Length: 181
Image 1: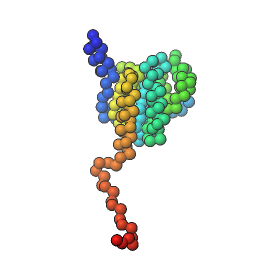
Image 2 (image 1 turned 90 degrees about the vertical axis):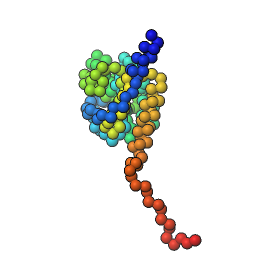
Image 3 (image 1 turned 135 degrees about the vertical axis):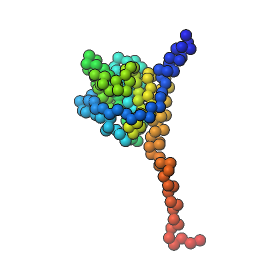
Image 4 (image 1 turned 180 degrees about the horizontal axis):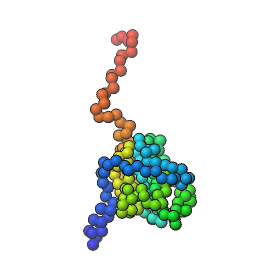
């Protein structure tokens, strides 16, 4: 039984390299402003689908906030997408304000966006996107998952700032004029 549980946990929390284009969408944020995934096309994005009633979602959020605060000036954002329906959507903004989360929080009340990315609608569900391309997905949240996501984000941000491998090396600095030995 333990082996079966371990196998289930490994499958549920496994990451997968997707290398597929992220599906575009526009949702309303908790301040009633329209936000599109296309607004972040040139960034590394962690999309986290969650709900106010989801315990593991609530455990993941402080880690996402820390990652966001440390890297938002480097071309990174978190799009926290609440899947709360009409009955529980009124709890989203108070929850976010109470916990002082500063990342963008979007509302997917009709589950249209989560259905595009995760038809099973398991929560939390995390999608890592690098400049419009899905590079990893994760279902669920367990201790250590935050470190895996952070390491991937930092790696993607480092690659984003790096020169392409086929770029020519910078020219050697010339000797200053008039210098003699």
